[in-house]
Amino acid sequence: MVGQVGGIIPGHDLAFMVIQKVLKYISEEKSLHEQILERKIDRGITKYAVNTMKSDIDVVNCRIKRLEDIKLPLDEQKIEVSVAFNSCQKILNEFNNKEHVYYMHPLITAPLLVAFSQLYTTVCTYGIELIPTYNDTVENEKKQLKDLMEEYKINAIEERLKMIKVVGMLKVPHYEGSNIKDNVSKLFNSGNIFNNLKDNVSKLFNSGNIFNKLKDNVKLHEIDIVKDGFGYDSKQNEWHYWDRTFWDQEQQFTNNYAYPMVVKIEYEKFFDKIINTIY
Image 1 (cartoon, one colour):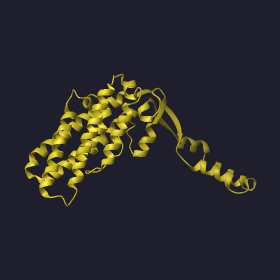
Image 2 (cartoon, helix red, strand yellow; image 1 turned 180 degrees about the vertical axis):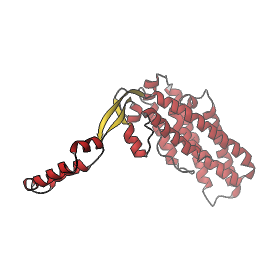
Image 3 (cartoon, one colour; image 1 turned 30 degrees about the vertical axis):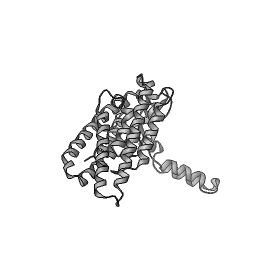
Image 4 (cartoon, one colour; image 1 turned 90 degrees about the vertical axis):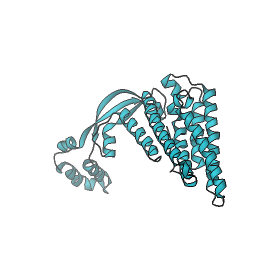
């Protein structure tokens, strides 16, 4: 959905990159979003809204660059922060409008909101420093931004999960150990195979009951069979296999979460990371 996000003070490249990806996404002949959710997207309106956002972000970014100029007189800094703040308030109101294309397609527009939230946080920081009377207004705006991010998080995740279909679940044997494999490797890689065959075979079969060792080291992994072209960057109806057991091992968990739950958790973690930068 979204790529890496910068720190509290992001660069122009981040915002531009995110917006370009969104523009490319909605410019497809029939976007994946539209195919799966069967929701008609008015590309003309959406493109216009995204390009307008890009222009507004460019304005805010230019103001921030001006504010970073240590030679800029204090009076001019206050003018710059005031203009940037007003621009951000306008953008925030548009994201908050439930009839706006941004709110109607949260999975598509969430990257824009993420980029904007970081820019606005920067402007708010400058605002409090340069114009102390902005303090109450800034706190109110940051709260509104945080609440809005929470809304988009819920709505974007809801749309994302609609793109996933779990076809079934399998329990598949998986070899967990390495002792037997290592011994077999030694058998064929220990120099002259004929001279070493007796010793290596003896090590393999006398290191304990081989059948017990196989039983101890072969575990059942629970595998979800899923259709998720968005997540796997594939065709809509292709099958993919999600190893719940392996995921638990990698994360050092024992939750045995199904694939949709893992997707939900990862999206929540991403949004929460951004939301935590607002305060």
